[in-house]
Image (cartoon, rainbow, N blue to C red):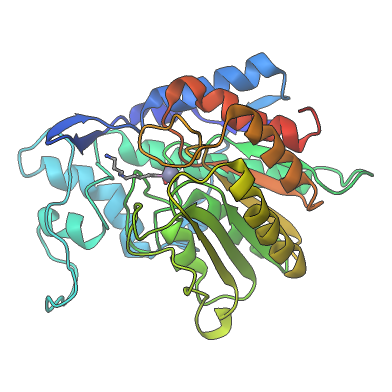
Length: 350
Ligand code: OKP
Ligand code: ZN
């Protein structure tokens, strides 16, 4: 299958609060470089660079003033005399009489973020925008490809970095700024898909994707993730979150226990895929996080590298045109192997 990427991801290399000090983020440029190297070494298929996309594709999913904030935050931050990464330190939590976006950049940072996990540096906006370009370019390539004769399970791979699934309509968080999977799913709808599904297999719940589609029936969101009672993002991802309004019944969360292995994972995966087929899905977007790997430094499932081949096979069995969008995975040495194993499994090459 085709892989789309952008070298512009190198412009983003943020910090993270770890063990009481500021360190380089787990979400590092090496991650995407390792995946791309493995794509090339494995002979997965052709590799292309992203094509720049119109801003309207972003604001079709995100609040325009949030996109404006992302674009201008670094300039506002440096105008106050600072050159290190911008991070929020105060948030409008429940109980505060929040009125509207504050004037000062330090207030805006908290207003447009769920945590201190989405640092903004000089190159962040260019990298974030390019990551959305990657998702849209890969989606267009998938929709424009000839239908073929097989099962219908054609795929393309958007090697996005930074990731996107924690980014909601109007906030960043958890290494995410623009929701690449949601932006691509929305374009699929604009291009005529009547029913789309997003399957999120990242270890962490995709609270941003859930937020964006929560009141919509045309885009089903289904997610397998660590139980938020014990796992980030803590404040979303419970099974009782099933959608609202017209979207009631079109959000499916499958929280799983700390330490879940492939044997416990696979029946739940199959149930999510059954649900996706029952939706009448015409196009599937997979938020492909490989932080479910047993060696991941910030996650707590126990999938092994060969399990990712089986993951790809089972997704392919749904028989749908499928866009894979890279999300998390922080064991840098293994992230290429595990991501590409999923794609090879999808193609029946496992
Ligand atoms: C992003 B994605 C690590 C704490 C975890 C946030 C995790 C974001 C995961 N010190 N911080 O879903 O892979
Ligand atoms: Zn994750």
